Amino acid sequence: MTAGHVYSQAPRCSSCEGRALLVKEAALALVEESLGRLTAARCPVEDGWHVFAPALDRK
Image (tube, rainbow, N blue to C red; front, top):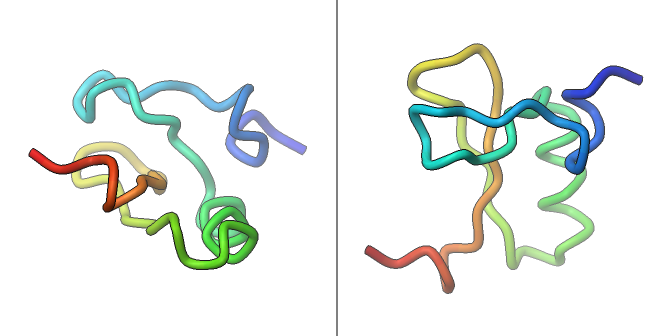
């Protein structure tokens, strides 16, 4: 497994508030395990995916 497969070891994206930069499969697995409380989105800057909690990440 690479760092992009494990949330706690994933590199952080400086353009996206330090969110973990994951491979798509890892991000989607976290969404599934969260029973829909998390959402995955492709990073607009780096090559990778982020997860976030819409209910908590209101701006």
